[in-house]
Length: 510
Image (cartoon, rainbow, N blue to C red; front, side, top):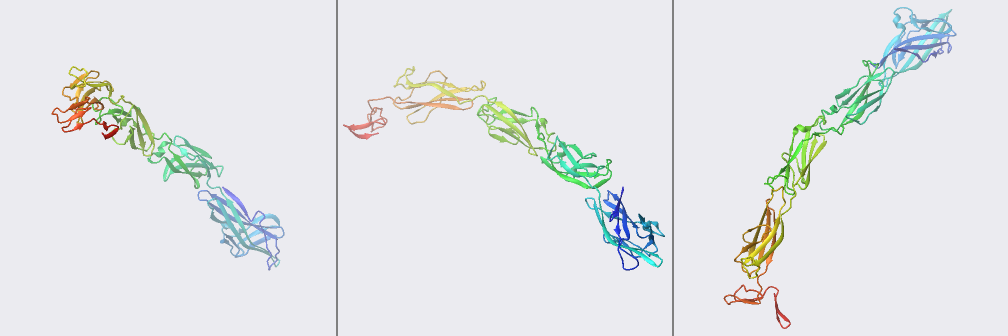
């Protein structure tokens, strides 16, 4: 498509007076008519210049003086040869007559050149003329002269601009791109790029387009939850989008991975079983509260990573009983009551999904002792402080653990300050006669112990004092005790806590 421009305007320049021949200012006018053809692909215009003159005062076959020039941006576009070559048949009127070559190549009736527009599609060219025309009649030379300059300006729309992009955009959603259409015939195509990788190219659109944002854009970015991308919009001359105009317009956009892009744990992925190895519950089936651990087994076929496009499993953590285990076999700490075990799968993007397992633990407590009765007796079990036997009775209890737990009830004793002897079996709730050689003159500590299948013990001790004597001699006559049986030769003994007084005066105190 071509456009026409007039320099300096449609009315041209008025001629100037010179100091030779017959000349007066303003007798003639000169204008350049420029036909401009623009090439969108190269952003250049081809200019074809023609010169026209007119005069309302003079007429005749005027000739262009040799050496006259037309310059563009300081460079000579054309220099006219000898005077007989170019001229114009000027008529005394307001019509414009073209300066043409009288002989030779008619192509020289116009002068062409190509100029570049700037990046915005703008062109500005300075045009200078130094041109003289003469006509001689009856010995008088009539002169029209111009030394003038003017500016040719033109603007061609270049690429459209981006006015808006959905930012941030999220996978499973859409991204809308809006442009300010630089020309009514222009169409566009858009690309979304991550670095040098093109994620998508749209079809042709006029002013707006919407792009679906798939998770697949993250396929090659396993560690990223967001991508810094560039939107490029290329402008084309028409809907066919075959001829591009200028460079693409660009805008930055962040693409985020939607919250559902993470590992998916299907039902049955994790299961927990009691783990009693190495614990007090080693022989027990099931989970014992406060004693047992659990071991978690995972089924990899039920771990779905398809939604976490491009990512892989980074860590698996099993948490329970105050312990987190991150390697197989996955074992918890000690569980209690109704215990929760959490299995967490984290991918390389740091996205996690968790499943919670519930383990019901069997109630468990240490064995109990109740209704404990201990006294000195004779061989028939009759209570007797002089007896050398013991009557022992206690009731013991243990946690059932689904009938897997059993009670062991025993009694042992220590005379004086000695240590405890062997354990003697008891039956819960049944009186048992023990001993036979016990010395009633020595204090006696009787310990009753309840033990269960987990080797947990509960014990209680009953202290039996020795017989009480007002005074007693040693069998060998070598010692005497007051309030107690003497235990040493050549010693006068009193029980601990007694005093010796003479009158009201304490002379010794234990």
